[in-house]
Image (cartoon, rainbow, N blue to C red; front, side):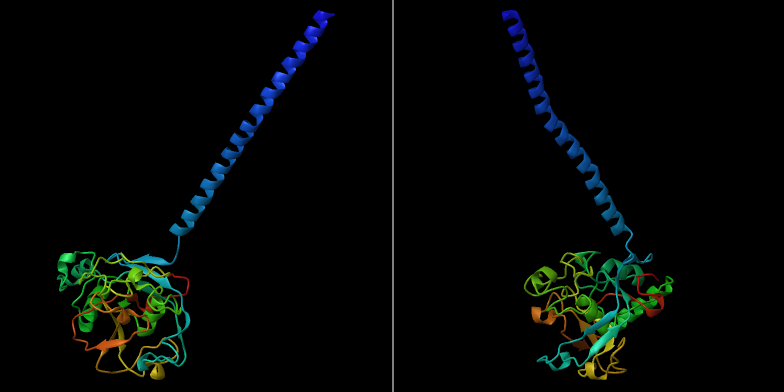
Length: 293
């Protein structure tokens, strides 16, 4: 009887031990299986995002100069500002623009030398990646003419309306090009150490355009007029038909931050050689509004 009791007790304890061992192993197996399931799914989602980014139609690189261009979708915006205290910034109506390609960076010294064969920049020791400067509006036209002869694409300076529209992220209400914090967006008198800097070091606006506030002032195609908003067309305006000064925008390393405001307007003689700008592709290269040419 005692042997039978001991045998039953031994069987019971053995069963209890095996049951306990199985219970402690099972959660570990479940956790391991769950971890393995999550891992591949996470990797797949990252790959999908990277693939979409790589195949975007919103960027283009010129094969001659390697200039990078960003597609700026067309739309309507309030150029200038209603009831502005400054006369030539007072807007009267909304402007409508077709889409266009805008250069991602200011024209660099390397790109200028490639086309023109020389470098007029005061800050030439800054290097190939710095913006070219000491350029007049007339010089810019010579550069564009030579550039256009080297490839199938036709470049030009942006209109004043295109420049402000792109600067303000398709017309947002911003103080500077990309927001309200000038120290993060542009090089100007207080942070430039009295010189230009490599393009693309500051924060771009949401379209991906760099240095539209600061670094170097940028020529645009228009003649300057204090009554620009009253005289210009509401659709794709080109400014006045004649004048004494050409418009430049954006401010530079030399200026106080007020000159870097997105709506600030200024002009100078076409032969005045102190600025440069950025290129846009001409209207003939824009076929539709999805970024194709």
